[in-house]
Image (cartoon, rainbow over all chains, first blue to last red; front, side, top):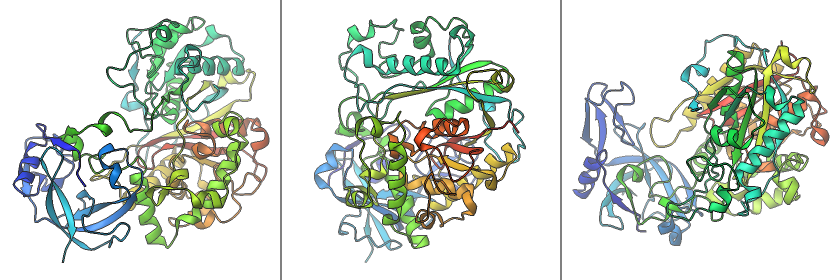
Length: 136
Length: 443
């Protein structure tokens, strides 16, 4: 299931460079000690852009919720329908969500609450992207 | 005349603001709609701009004022239903030049400015106040109500228009691209993972069902009721073009979009314009239509911590919105004759009405409530307008219905199990919207 290619921009470049090295990093405000995702230019709590860093994550998360997509607007994914589209929450901070197609999990057999581990998949242009696989 | 977005000071976004200072001092006195269509047919006579002019003129006529008495215009400049004019697509200059164009040739076709309207409605000779409320009619209403209350305009038109073009919803542009930007790829929107528009709502509904032991089929009575009410709305898409009931069997047989959201849980994008005329309560006394007074407006500006709102975040926000609505109007949930909260997606209507505590509802109660009598004939009407599900995606049927019900002009859709005295409408999203309390009486 190949996703659209990704062209890193200034804001997200560190996220994508880390993904190519098979590391998961998330924006963190060192002043607030608070993670945030998706990335933005300033801390969503204190409003400052001066204290943002990219912090390494363990790559462990839990499945929070999911739907089964039968009618995606994304042309490149349409031949793969239906597919799982889950939201996982990082173990470091359950307030931080990431999307996942849960590769290896049968459609509509998603174990909500189960542990997942990050993997990295190549998109259409070779840029790697974090994905998640049910642990164990 | 350069039109700006409304300043932040216009919005009542927090609890603790007390009663709205203009409570009962602003009134709706006119309504106008264009006909509906599924998509633009390409003719100059049926553009979104043409619909806009028609709806505005009908609202003026309905109110019984002369056009030169209009001194304000509040609109939503964004008119897309999800259909965008692709960069590089040829622009039909015959259509553009059928009207008095602005510098932007898509103005009046795929976007709308106050400037374009004023160029093409020469009868509006005294408009001195213009402002944008972007997103939907719920937003424009709040802006216009505050502007009239503040004395910035006395007789103000409010307009929301939609254009819909050929092609499937949101499937062009970035959705068809082979490469996208890094920010888009990890953003909360469509993203490279491919969520349809209803994805977030489907997630919240799935969590709601797990938490409270409910199921998707429990939505069927609500859906049938909404379509029934919509078919009694002669201005609406389904009543005009496809007068078909929606049975529980139809609903349950519908294909999934993002399970547990099915086709019918999504509203149908249409071309349509709607307009209202607002004025001061003082001026409204002597006008053609019975005034419907605005007791309060309130706005939700909550945002999700991460990619998509959780059920906890949704419920915290809708609870707060309910408290803001009632506090500013000086009423309680018990004072509501009926509710017309937003429904486009159907699966979040229950979040809105549980947040209101409509008919004593608590979180988790709404789907059971849907199994009782929620009809316009009963004591507990739910969405008597039929909303977007009943009449297509306008995001204004619920406001029109509130005004018409309180004026006694809702026709076959009139609520009969309650006396129509106070109602609430608004949206769109449970987390992010604008809401209005309407009343047959100013106090």
